[in-house]
Image 1 (cartoon, rainbow, N blue to C red):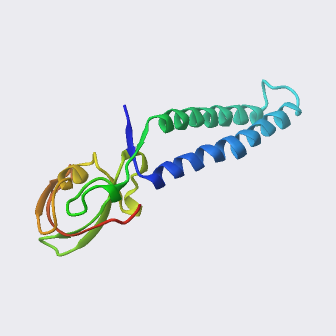
Image 2 (tube, rainbow, N blue to C red; image 1 turned 180 degrees about the vertical axis):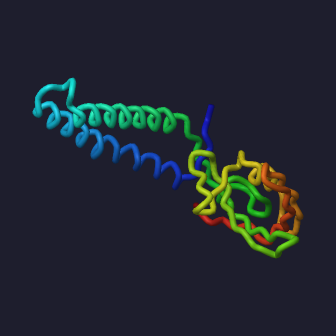
Length: 158
């Protein structure tokens, strides 16, 4: 199963993997060696903590390697720019409160609400896909139902 992602998202995942392999893995190995030098391993909390961290780092490396193999990099600049699609940024206005929001639609792996990146699989993302500027879109989330008007669609590389 392919995982949709932007070029920037793919690069960020690769950078995280590189950091884990080149920086974290050697540091954990060094921490284990140092903890071993302190003697009895059965009662050595440093050794236990280092082994736990090693397990976490190795698990994260394996997960990232598997995901990187399944990525499908989608270039939004090659698709339509007049309707909401993966990788584009949409400006919305709540029709009741006039509050504006700006979201970039990305894959689940790179979604980050604080950065305004929402997954195309989220309720908001699914509701917006395919709409054009001027459309009113009713979005139902577990918390509430909101009607937004689409004010703009941009190619804002996330």
